[in-house]
Image 1 (cartoon, rainbow, N blue to C red):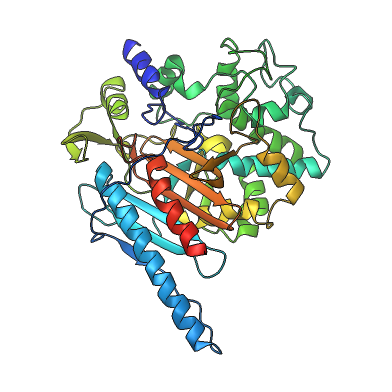
Image 2: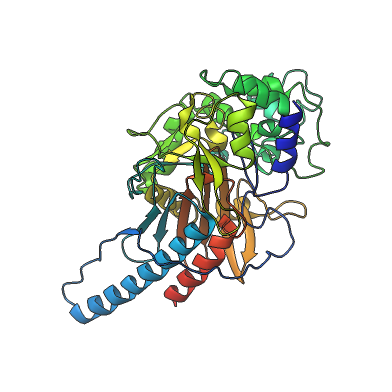
Amino acid sequence: MLLALTLVAAACGGETTASLAIEEDAATAEATSAPVEQVDTVEEAPAEEAEVVSEDAEVEDEPLAEEVSSESREVLIAELTEALEGWRSTGGIPGASLSVRMPEGDPINITVGVSDLQTGAEVEVDDYFRIGSITKPMTSAVILQLVDEGLLELDEPVETYLPGWLDGYQYADVITIRQLLDHTNGLIEYAFDPEFYAQASARSDQAISSAEIRAFLATREPLFAPGSQYSYETGGFLTLGDVIEELTGNTAAEEMRARIFAPAGAENIFLAPQEFPPEQVVNAYGRAELYIAGTLLVGREDTDKLTIESTVRPDDPVIDVLGQPQDVLQSAGWTGGGIEAQLESVSAAFGALFDGTILTEAQIAEMTTTVLDVNYGLGIDNAEVDGERVYSHGGGVPGFRSQANYLPDYDISWAVSANLIPLPEGATVGDLRLLIQPILVNAAG
């Protein structure tokens, strides 16, 4: 238990997090109203391990325009590849996948590094990653659609739609749908709770349900009165999944596919544990607190003795998260962090939330209106980053660190996922964003 408490204390510090099911800073801005800290550009390594897959759109009647467009696109791909590989090598990150969608042209998909440290297999663009809490904005979008359909109201208590949802909890009858979406409900983050961690680790080969997690939350003391403060948590988004199913009569996965994935043209994206990709996600690695959690805390011997090399930590030991049962890991996140996907589908779905494909202007305005003194709205971070407005959400689960971004002034979306967590100093998703964003803004003119 002392070790678990140590891990939780580290988890609360931001990027270095050791939660069993969800690790999240929501976005690089850390969901605060303070300015985003600038970072120095890292020294970029050659992109020898990069794989680039892209197709140029044909313009038969304008060959000169096609040539110029193709040249600009190739320059953009080269710059993005160099930035991604420099970031990867700085952090000793085994592998990463990046997908970018500009206003015109086919998506740009870039991978660097390896999907398996033991075999050396390179990351491919059709590999699957777990994107964690990037799931939350998609759940929020479904809820906002149900509001417009008259099936629920944001400021109505959750109890109205899901009677007994938090039986015995002090504020069960007053917490609203909106307070689940904007994290002002006062619930603890269950994945950071030592007791939950211990219980879940002891049954890693058995799926855990949202009802079980809510029953656990009902036994914990509130952090504050609902609506009075902000504290990021995931149990509220699992509850929203239950609300979706209660109101529609369909599974949350079915609703998300029909309302989000299909309209976005995102085919290779799946909401676990109700559906899974046709192939297993890439091998994923935990270092620092996650290495401790994956070995000492669960009693697992590190027989592989794998290490990575970052600029700040040589011979850094890592544990392959896929070397243990996945049932709890693939069920504890669900509508709060369960999506497994190819990155091209992630950038497609995330961008479609804000480009008019899925949400109306009024719904987007509702979603991106921030609460209290933080940058967080209804399942989305809305902040100014390096002088540009960005809608974003981060995601972190054991073995994976991800982020999705949308630049509303340029209609650009991009998403990245790495198969390592926590990311070392100097190679966080925030560091990568400060490398990638200027390249995209410059390319947009």
